[in-house]
Image (cartoon, rainbow, N blue to C red):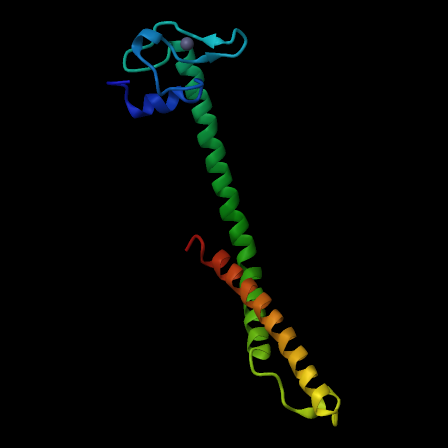
Length: 153
Ligand SMILES: [Zn+2]
């Protein structure tokens, strides 16, 4: 593949099965599905393809570029649309974390007043487990939202 520019190797990869073991003697490296063989016609100078297959490769490349740009545009539009929602949700999640993040309340009224100490301990533990799970969930969601908001900035 000496002397073949990278852009030409890139083009060839749109129509060839493999481009890594090519030599000029192979001729055009485009794969023809219908006859299950390589094209083999004389390749253009500094190219791995014949005129016909180079044009085909150019068309596929153009299509690929267009699709990439369109996908990119859609991602940008989606982000712009979602950003206010993500930011509002993050504010809510952070407020919840603030609210649940503290130590479980020791206010006995919060779990039924004068319970037996062992029941109280159990209730405290359950409250704490629930809190830990809730906090883990909230902090995962907050991270996810921060990633989304931060991407593209
Ligand atoms: Zn060809």
